[in-house]
Every structure is written in structure tokens, then in C-alpha cells.
Image (tube, rainbow, N blue to C red; front, top):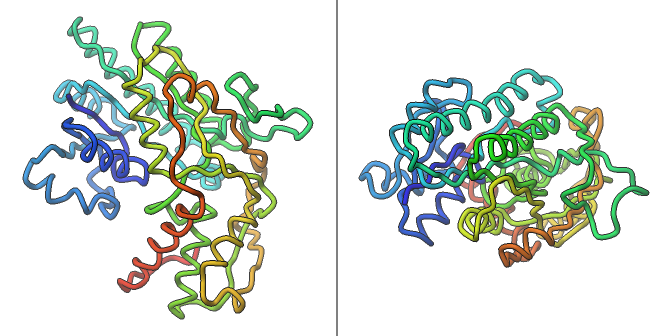
Length: 343
């Protein structure tokens, strides 16, 4: 079996590759751009060099021919479409790039797969399109279902990123319904852990704490909105869910909410990370206006019963373990003497 991962050099893509190498005998093909940083996949480099089950291929969501070429060359049995412009705050200043990469880029990939299926009637890949819980956006508290946000809640995206993920979600379902492709979409709620980008709230908190402990910056953690409610899952549970999605009786056109079980305010997440630092009593917290979104999706609590009932998936990694591993990830990078932007 062959699996194709778009965005293999990202947090989720790299963990997806790790999971497949450890738990299957599949060949893993990663799509990356020539300029993609390889920090998250350094553990795979030796395998890539030896052509030992892991292969990197150049392609770009903004280049249709590169995607057609890769799909035709590999003919993957499974496709995990994880590549995206994934940072909501950046989407406010780069909306066109976000919409083009996430919506049109997804369309280009699905077209490449459709064209290959048209050429070879026996080719029937299973495709996972990763949307986002951000599609639900800013749901008023009085309209939030008691059991959490379920799949049929209306979309109310609160950023260009969220709008782009609405398009991504609908494209996946369209290709399933219009062309009989086995495409499924997921709306994963907040998922984090080692390798999380430092532009996301819990990861920038952990990075700042690690830098403070090393004396690299003053003892101040700068934050955005701390009153937003989030439900956290571990990225390693997330990729296990994605594997189950494509292997447990995949249903063409299906769409699922997936998320963890620990719900808290962002300020509680910061408090958890601070409690793990020996300098917790010395660290101040300050709001940084540049970290605030013009509008925030602030009630992100999922109802994941549909996915759990279909696959049997349950998150296994405790929230505290996730946060500890995230903090230790940044401590290790700081200890290596890396230089970081203070963001």
C-alpha cells in the first residue's frame, strides 16, 4: 500500500508519517516544496536517503502540473491532504494567499486524483481532506448545543482561514458526490503537541516559557485573547484518528468532527504550562495587541459522537502529558542554541 501525505513537513504531516511507519507496512510518500524546512521530519531523513519506505516528492498546491505528476507517478492508495496555510491570524493580512492555497489548492489536488481515476478505471484511492473546526466560527453561547458543536451546526467562519476551510470542506464532499470518489472530510478541533508551530497560542506560550527559563528573554509571556474556550487533543491521537478514518469502512462524502475531551479557557492552558516551570512565580503575563484577531472563534467545544461511533476511536493521551511534551519540545530546541523570533 502507498500513502501520500501533503504537508508532510508540518506538525500533523510529520506525525502522520511517524504513525504509518510504526503501525503499518505501507510506503509513505510526502509532498513538500523545495524550500520546506525539514526540522519536523529529521527523524525520517535517513530512511528517505536509503529509500526505505519513506520518499519525498516535490509538488506545490499552487502548481497544478506538479500535483498531476505526483499522483500519476505514485498512484497512492491513501491520500492524507494536510497541507494548508494554517494560521488564522496570518489569513487576515494574507487572505488571497490563504484562499488560493486552501481552496484552489485542494481543488487542484482532487482534480489530479480525478484525472488519474479517469485514465485508470481500476484506480480507487481513499482520500482524507482536512478541514477545520474553525468552519463553525463564532457560535453564540445561547446557540451552542448542550452536547457541543455537532456536524450539522451551521458554518459561521470568523476569519479568511476559516472561510477557506469551508471551501475545502465543501470541495471534498462535492468530489465524492459528483464523481464517486471516496473522499471524506474532517473538522479537527484544537490539536497540539511536539512540533506545533510557534504562531499558535499554546505553543508560543511554551516557547516563551522555555526561553525565559534559559534567560533568553525577560520573564514576560505575551498573549492574545485568553478568554477563548478550546477543547484540546494530542496530535498523536489526531493522526491515529485519521488512519482509522481511511481504514475503518470509509464512506464516500462523509464528514466528521474530531476532537479531544479536555475543555478550558486559553488562560487555563497558560496556567497549566506556567505550573510546569520552576520560574512560575517570577513570570508575568501581558496582553500583546498584535496577537489579537479582529474576530475570534471562541467557543470551540466538539461533539464527536458520529466519528467515535463509526470508528471506535477515543483519545488516549492526557491533556497534561500533551502540554508537558510540548513544553519539553521547546526546551530541547532552546537547549540546542536555536534562535527564535519573539512571536
